[in-house]
Structure formats: C-alpha cells, structure tokens
Image (cartoon, one colour):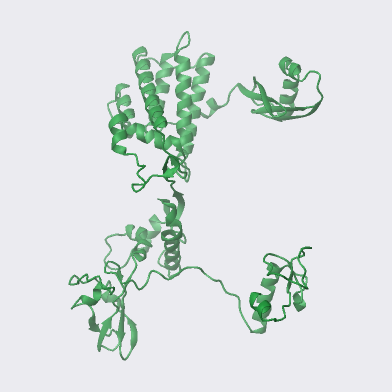
Length: 475
C-alpha cells in the first residue's frame, strides 16, 4: 500500500470492511481485519476468510496453485560449532556428494583428542582422528561433517529413551515405549513451552509417522510452575532479594517451608514470599501438634468411635468432606494444594470447636485425628510421621493406605444459606437440605426476619439458588 501510494500506482480494493469511516475511493491506509470481497469476480460477496478456502480450491482445480500449511518451526537444532552436541552422521565425498553414515556404524561418537581454541570454529576440526573417513557409498576417502546438532536434539526425545535405556541396537523398543508412553505429567518452567516442548512434540509426531511408537503426543498433562517473588519482584541473586531456604529450615523446620509454599499460591501462579505467611504456617503446625497430643491424652486407643449428637455429625461431615477435597486436589492434572490445605485448616478448626464443647467425643476425635495426620502427611511429612508414631502406630505412615470417605456422610440434614437484599448480604439462615428453588424461595419469604428486612418495599424479583443463597431484589 505504501509503495503504491508513493509511486502513484492504482490501488484496487478487494475487501470492503463495511466501515462508514473507510472511503474505498480514497484509502489513506491499508485496512486489516475481516470484510466482504469486492472486485473479485465470482468471489464477490463472500467473507474474506470464507473466500480464502474457495480461492484455494479454485486454484487447485485450475492447476495454478495449491493450499499448504506454513509451519513456524525454526531449524536451529542443526549446525552448531560446539563439541558437546550430537555429531551429524553425514559424510562428504567428492564423487558422491553428501552421504549418510551406514546404520551399522551408528552412533557416531565424539572424539576425545580435541582442543578448545576459542577461535570460533568447531572443536571437532582440531581432532586428528575424527574428520578423515571413507565414503559409505563408494569407499573412497571422504570427510565427516564437523558441526554438531544442538543439545535440543537429545532433550527432544530423552523420555522415549528412558523407556528402554539399555538397548544397544535401536533407540528404544516399540513395545516398551508403547507400554510407558505417553508421559502422564510434565512439570517445567514456562520457558520450556516455546522451545523444548515444541521440539518434543515435533519429534514424537515424526517417530509416530515412522511407525516407531503409537503415541502421537509426548505428554498428557503440563504444569508450568510460577516464580517466587519478594516485594513484588522476581527473586534473584543479582537483585539481592533472595531468601535462603537454609535459614527458614533452621528457624522453623522444613515442614513449615513446605506448607507455606504450597499454601501461599497454586503451583502454576507466582508466589509472593511473606515472612508473616511463614510465621503463620509455623503456628498452624504447632496448633495441630498440640491438638493431636491433647486428643491422645484424653482418649483410649481401644474406645470405639460413635457419631451421636449434632457436634459429632458436624465433625464427621467435616472429616469426610476434607478427605474428599484433599483427594480431589491430587486428581490427574490438578494441583490444588492450597485449597486442600485450606480444607485441612477448616477441619482443625472444627476439631477444636468440638474439643471445647461440654462433652467432647474423644474416641471420635481420635479417629478424626488419625485421618487428619494422613491427609496432612503429603504436605508436611516429618511432623506427620512423628504424630503417627505418637498415635501408637509401629509402622511408617507412608505404608498406610490413603483414607477413603463416607459418601453418605456428605449429605447434610440442614445447610446454611446466605440471604441478600439487592446483592448485599443481610443474614444467614439454616434450612432443610435438598429444598427446591421454589420451596427455598417460599420458606425464606415467609421468614420473620426477612419480612422485617423487606417491610415497606416492593419485591421486584427473588433469585433462589438451592443450598447456597436467596437474593431479594427490592425498590
């Protein structure tokens, strides 16, 4: 467009953006975006994206062009002037040109008689034994390629070699690769997404097309972990804002460091380091320790737990809900550690509330304490191992099965709902569990306190969400 304007060339518009601000007879600039084709013969009136496909079909039918896919991969795995890359198994012969090395001579091994001169050429050129060879095709003297492939070449398929690491005859056995692949979970930095992961996916698809593996994708799930920030900036030695893990461990213990990191943010988000948060994690673990020991002192290991009163039902519900939520946080592709720890904290609060009641049910509290230690152990393994032993177990907690939850215990007789007036919370109420939308609306509109809140006002609309809230719109 700029070229045509500069040299006075005619510009024939072929896409009408249908924008009143654009004068097609006096264009001032090129118009990006979508529009309708004009001055395009049989394609007039089509949206430009739709027209692209039809024009490609037209050109293919006429034999004057064809559609293609433009991949944005860049060939930077090849031709590096480094020693530590993979040798390129190609040989140059004056008569035959470039010839691939024979398969029985693979892999080509790097020589050890090299000098690192720093003069900008491949160190392989300094070897007296590596370069000279014979042509695999005609047997005449020939010379090896002196460049190497980037280390990305190896990191693009190392996971396949892991499935059969001792195979001396081929990269890997298909049966073994098919048994293990694809990888269930990949964890890495976000910078991997545009380099290593791109090439790993490319190589996997090539191997699949060659019939070497059944998997078409290398990794089932991807987690890119966030960075650790201090005062809003990325932790860095050069900036001088790092926090030494050794100091945290020395003062609070490794369990505190683990709990804070896992609770402060989801693993795929940036974590803002907080000394106050570390202190809070330390206090919570001490609170759990005191709770377990007090329950242990007041309960006999032989007493059978029972669920009787409302407090017991509430505690039993909270225990099962916590086991379910923590279990769900470990489900495939999910890493909701912070919400899992939050659930455990809610359970601890409920245990303290029941412990402080007039008649604490210590046998039930002891059962809940054991489940608490089990679900907490993946996050803070050391203190949980000690508490498990104090609860009277002779074997390690890590030989125990993961606790299951009682599905029926997760159904409450009553639930707490929020009552809002024009979107603002005015009260909370306990109602029967399982009420329909209509029944919940009817019950709350008949509530004496709700009638007081809406007295003298016109009720425009009532929005009831079963088990959660009722919002009353008034004017």
